[in-house]
Image 1 (cartoon, rainbow, N blue to C red):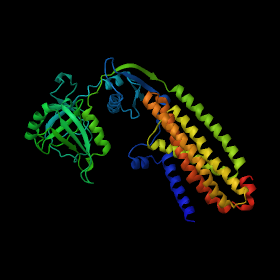
Image 2: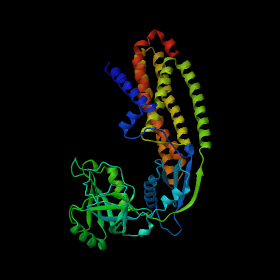
Image 3: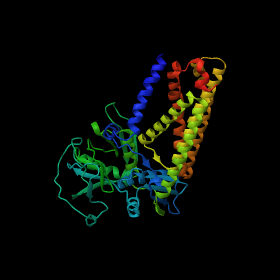
Image 4: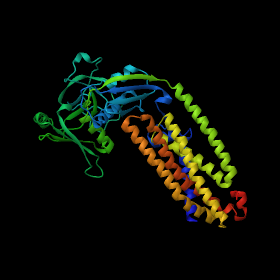
Length: 468
């Protein structure tokens, strides 16, 4: 009895959650709860956009780690284009493939890729700026290169007390660059010192920069030192004490405390502000969405026709369990789609194929379970005993077959990441996710609904309800 109530309560919560996420409406509630807009993310082949192939010039001695670091930097830079689904993938030993869904302006992409990546530690004195503010510094850029100027009034506001929009304009005041990213010897992350604190970013300077930085921090304790990338402020820590040994720490406080992801992003930006390898554009092309949309429509139509035929077969051959399987598969599809929205997963045409194949895995698990139940009923067991024993005997086959599919998906994903066959990755990811959810739907949804129906499925009506 306890298990039945558990299944009913769990299914009720699951149904409410999935409906809230998947179906239109509740936009304000979803945005407030998840802190972002919940909507499907379409890949390059479905949405259209740009694809850029970057190549390291001949003569560079590079490895996979160098290319991965370069792709991470490029992806972070490309966020400035407003294309949140942009991705860069290492392809082979010498290439990086960048995809910009929804973007067709070649010049915008080229400008972002060719950014200098100049990292500077800038003396601000008492002038605090929000991240994203563009600064004028006395290093590397002449004053003539700035297109616009505004008057700036210094304001010694404390960190954490600002509640205004980021000022993206260029300040009219020129600030002094103390050291640059070229002076960093290493950057690492330290765990929080207490539960109320965040992660700490530690850095060590090269010997020649240590003395210069020591003099500046000694004479400017309590002042602000901005970390600036390509003239844009990314962080504004306070110099809390002189740094005389060339080792320093950057940390947030209160609501601005660093999470592990924040700290790691800052570490990458600090140490790899400049690309570790020079890259040139080997190829760029604009991809239209019309072909992908047509293929998607045909794929979904084929999936709908196949699903309808399978539903008809399940209802005729398995009777009551077949109807339960249809309900379970519908929930399987809704849960999958909800996960795609929440992560979010970029949907591509191969990804849709993986999703449709995952439906087959979900049906396979139900069929194995139902055949075992029919065998137990033929032996003369009651409906409740047959459902319980049928599941136990079907579980090893369900587990092993789905585990084999997940292992295959992992291999395909690794192959796509290592050898640049990125088209395989979407298929592998959605297939593995579909198989995992199919196990959940068979274990919780199908079994839960069957257990709830036991009082209605009388033993004398085995032929009517189970087709035996």
